[in-house]
Image 1 (tube, helix red, strand yellow):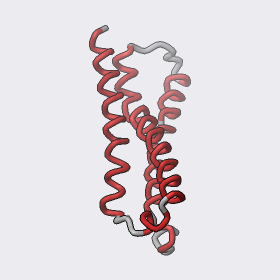
Image 2 (image 1 turned 90 degrees about the horizontal axis):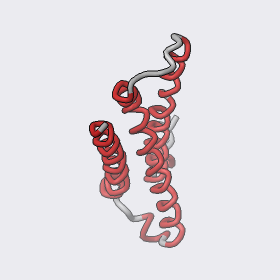
Image 3 (image 1 turned 60 degrees about the vertical axis):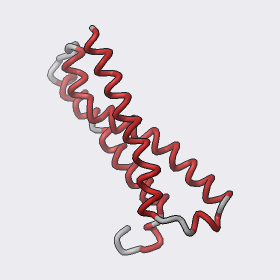
Image 4 (image 1 turned 90 degrees about the vertical axis):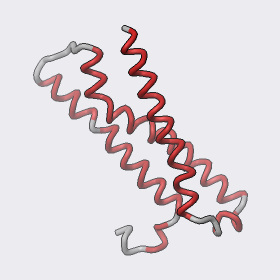
Length: 118
């Protein structure tokens, strides 16, 4: 549907779509949890849990940061409407998504470092 409607190709809508994809990654953790619950494996080592939860946790962290980016984007569009309408999407989207990806990677690296210490 988005492919056919050009009005939905704005920067905010792209950010919402990326955030929705991150939420899909985050929700995939429920499949992992259900598998372990149905196979009655209630306790697993922390390292194994980290590897299973790496992608869902990364999606959760990036999605959370993108929620903040979407909020800032909406405030920016209200305060500076003329400037916002002329912003290049090719520049604006990387500026708003790269910090989110860096945040998600930093949290995962910090978690791995803490796991390595144990």
